[in-house]
Image (cartoon, rainbow, N blue to C red; front, side):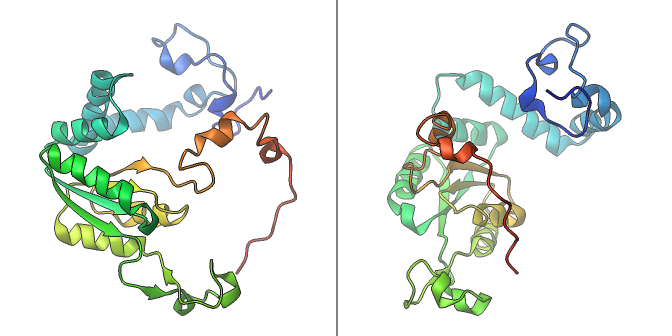
Length: 224
């Protein structure tokens, strides 16, 4: 067990002093609160001084309390959007989750929102243009379009969406979408093709069925 601070490792904590009233619990030596007190004080000032950040934080907390253990995530998305005054929602979705994305759109429309949806393959950019070799494709020997989360973000920005919802974008593609989304964004579905888009199942079974995930493996060099 770590006893000194060498960077945040909150998952190792059994005290959770951060959840209690200040000075009522003694944090462990590796807690970032005493070690990074100046930085965290600056963060607090950001919440207090920046109106846009403050509003998002306030309505997030109100959404959490209002639906705690009662509302589904899709309901919380709509609740949060209403609290923020967002009327135009965007859905950035995987081409393989068209049915789920259509269901989400129907729910949002029924909830009174205007909805725009963009599939990950919009633009049909040839993977080979970016340097993907044929043997690196999902299906070698065939044309494959690159997923274009940057394009999804651009199209939703042009449509003027207030709030974007990610449904099943691939790992890394979702990162690109968050980097380029002009509007605040959230996730409704995290892709996991093996576990039926329920990635937390691998965590719950990491000491049984997926024990192999916790076994140390030699580090691979990154590809150019």
